Image (cartoon, rainbow over all chains, first blue to last red; front, side, top):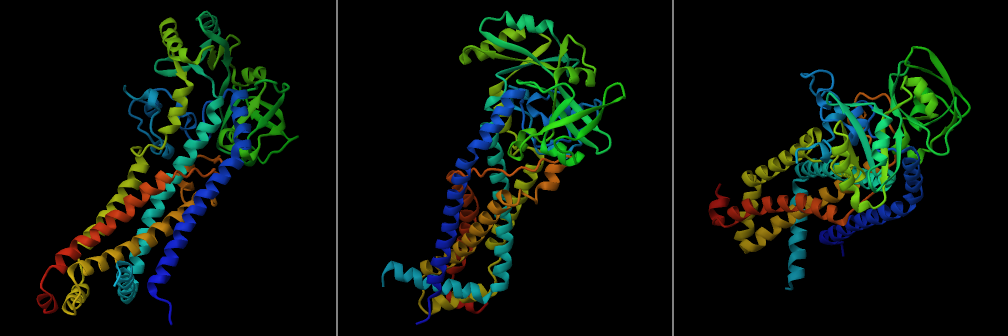
Length: 99
Length: 377
């Protein structure tokens, strides 16, 4: 008797759900394994008094967003609009937004 | 016939029906999966960065005091340290020296920081992986750097920060505080900013208020604010992410619109035949719903798993040109996955449910029409 199409569908859907479960388990495993590396990075942050992640290096307000001042979009002149691509990815830190 | 067996028969029929138009349905699934892939990649990437920021920036200074002049960050005089030390509840008030260095030969920007405890020997530096890559330098090499007076000073690399710490150290050059002062020409009695600790963490806000009152030309930045910066860093309202989300929403609207307005003649005739041979309206709707569920589940599973592989196994290479921007130095970090089941569920309901619902509505309107009139179309 040939395999029913619905059986194939349920097997494939089960495999898809299984892949999601494997993803979650893998994330948990990597999380546990990363603790040592995170502790090393946290120790470096503490030793050098660092304040920001090194995600972007093209603009100073993207390299150190938490240290940026209120006038960074106009840093070169009052009419100099944002022109760094990284500036379009990040939003201003909460302490620079109007309360 | 049991409900289970009835639905299995309907699924069998729905799969055969999808198979008869396999080219159209395959194209639809691929585009749909791509939309899910884009959304899932953004969600996975931003959540992983936020989680990493919370884990590594817990060691950041409790309060950073910056001096502002004409709206810009300026050097802060040493005399401010004495004022801060007199505030009740503060401890470990110390000046911080750091700055940016543009390397003309490579075009890369580096962050130069003064050595912490234990300090490096004068004339030596520790560099991040990104600096080592752009300068092609390693431990024991001498690196010439152009100082503020135009003269070159050579520093010996005594340490390269580990690859694991690249997310915080990629562009760092650590050097002795005296070397940094001489290199940038920072006057003896000035610092870049001041960091301080507070005896009781509950008093952080009170101390910050006192700092604002005593030193009106400064602004205190709390560690909590630094951490919140990364919580809102890739806010969905920020430029490019808004474009991505708007694109995804537009794609879904097009899907839904297409489904809601264009049941093909073949599909309408199929429904007419089914009703003519005895299918009930509810069974026709169930069949079309299963078609929608099959397509959206395939797109959801495919798009989500591919997004996971993209972000956590291939360093989000599709995002790299955007993240790199104009930078020469690009940190190569392997993000640690942070999957919240809530995120996956949200993604599921944002993608699978609207499509399935959009499939049911036109089917319902077509399935309630007399089969004879549909077949005569």
